[in-house]
Length: 184
Image (tube, rainbow, N blue to C red; front, side, top):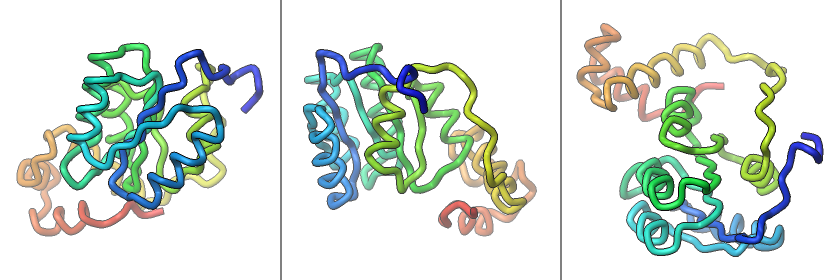
């Protein structure tokens, strides 16, 4: 990424980090503080929503899957309370459907874990609207299938029975697929 595509950290350096992986959360918080952010941490959707309501930050990094719910709930509150905030959604379950859902709700960008602090800062501060370069390693057939299943699952409002019916698949088979990490 070129230097002219990155915006300097503004006057408001507030950053909310929401993740239930405590060691990762602490490491990321230290790394972001070193880069000039004023970090506030939350380990759950409830804590993230409370901070977003009370002190909406200029920046946020939100994990998609948390123990007490979906990180997109925090994104919705942030968008409502501070429409200009820049939000990056992180997840260990990278899927095009969830990326689209995150961006539609108001996330600025979407990164799959493991993402390092530099990737996150670039995503938070980038302003370029240019398309990214084509991938060096395109998706495998298994990954394309998995992405399609995730998309239908999201379109069915995460209803497993309805998704299985539409995909002409047994519900338990679908549940096993959804429980696994995405193929490479």
